[in-house]
Length: 207
Image 1 (cartoon, one colour):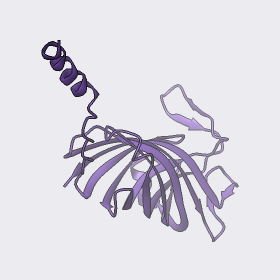
Image 2 (cartoon, helix red, strand yellow):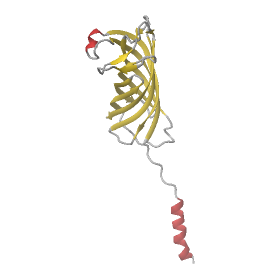
Image 3 (cartoon, one colour):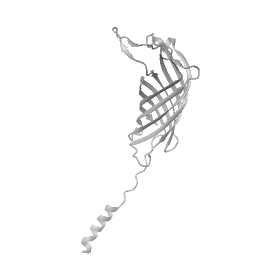
Image 4 (cartoon, one colour):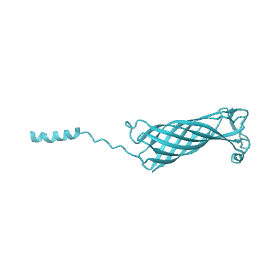
């Protein structure tokens, strides 16, 4: 009986053994990439550099360019295919340059395949206005520039365990303030505060 039961006890002991803990995955410290932005004013593009400071904290610098639209704008297309916005004086573009920190959430409880984070950035914002009555590209010859102070707050996540290519998705809220009277989008309406929400797809290379 002892000879028959002893293999069963050994098998049961093996079943009860605790699996060794999985070693945490480490990713390269540097990331260089591209942001594809979708917002209320249309599409935008940006670039970034990130540097890992610790397991949970990452520093970054980034910039982007996107169009800002007034909530009162109403577009329609005329008989000749031209886009008409009644009362629109200028197109408004913002190019924010931000420096900030990104904090990783739930590092101990989630797998490396999903890495959520919150981010906060601040910096100057170059605001351009171009005459709406002129064709889109030729209007930049008459562009006027102002500098605002702003920043953004965001929440998002990086996906996958590839140690070379980065894929992420986040939502950001941008806010900027102009100090010299604002910019004129709709005729006679000057805006000192610019804000907007953007859904951002992040593509990058880690090294």
